[in-house]
Image (tube, rainbow, N blue to C red; front, side, top):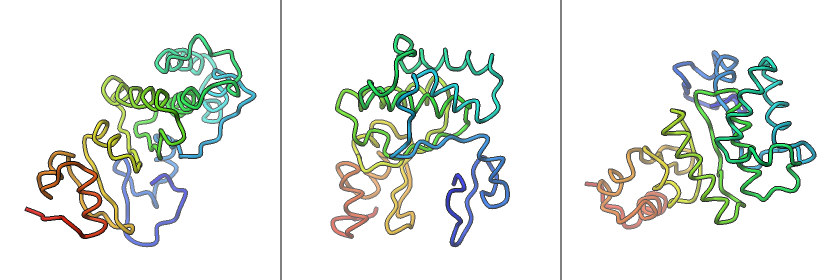
Length: 199
C-alpha cells in the first residue's frame, strides 16, 4: 500500500489512487511506521524530526513549528534536546510516531506499534493513537496481533488469513456475526475454522 512491494495480483487504492499507477502521489501523503523502525539514537528527539522532515523538503520555519507542536503532542517537549539513545522504548516509539507525523500525512500505517514496549510505554502509545485519530483527524491503519489493542483502538477491523481478507467490520459487529465473546474468538475461529458460526 506504500509501494514497498509490487502487487502479485489484484489492485489496491490509497486516497483514491491506484498504488501501481500513482505511488509518488501516495508517498507524499502517507507515513509508514514499521515494527522495526530505525531511529537515529545519537540525534536528539527534535533533530530526528527535523532531519526526517527535511528529507521531504519542508521549509525550515514550517518544520520547526511542526516539530514544536508534535513534541508537545507526544509529551517530549521537555526532552527535545536529549539524545534518543537514553530514552525508554515507549519514548523512542513516541519520537517515531512524531517523526511519521512531521509530514502531516493523511494516512498513517503502523505495524505492531507497541511490540517490544513496556506496559506503561504501550499505554502511552495507545493513548497517543487515540488522540491522533480523534483530535488530529488522521486515518490510522494498524497491524497487530494484540487483539485487546484492536478492541481498544479500532473503529473497523479486517482479519487476514493466509493473505486473504477473511472478515471486515466493527469489532462488535464481528463478535455478533460470529457469535463470539471477543475478537480473539473471532480471529481464532476464522483462522482455525473451529467454533465459528456465522449468523
